[in-house]
Image (tube, rainbow, N blue to C red):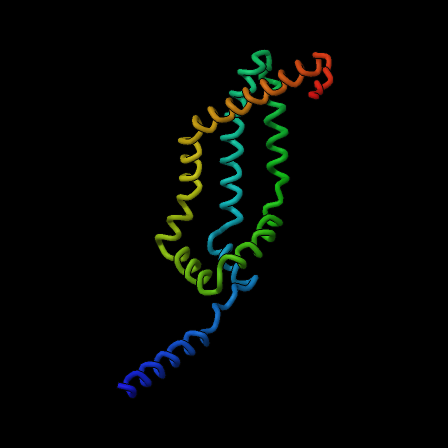
Length: 180
């Protein structure tokens, strides 16, 4: 009985020491992440998503502005659209990708990145990448009415808060009463 117990302890100590010696996953290198970005065609993906977001936001903002300022002209809206378009063109996508590298390195190890690269190189992964911009745009369009309603509530609340603030400023300030 003692021998069996000693043998179990010995085996247990070997198994625990072998778990302790398992090397940590190798971190993903900058090159690993850049390769993943290239496989994912991330630069173009980001451009398409940003264009889709800009279009969706433009429509929601137009509706909101027209409701709040019915006198706004199409020319004024066109100027606003041009400003938005200019800002979107200036977005530094390459710099944004550079900023993303350490984030990916923090959350993904080399094995993760290799598996993702393999997936996105596969026919299914390529299809996912091809369809992702349309799926994102359609999802945003589907969620648009919900987002618009929420924006309206936020704008109404901001208007109400601004009115209350103006009304408080109009009223003379009374000193706080003292209790004895």
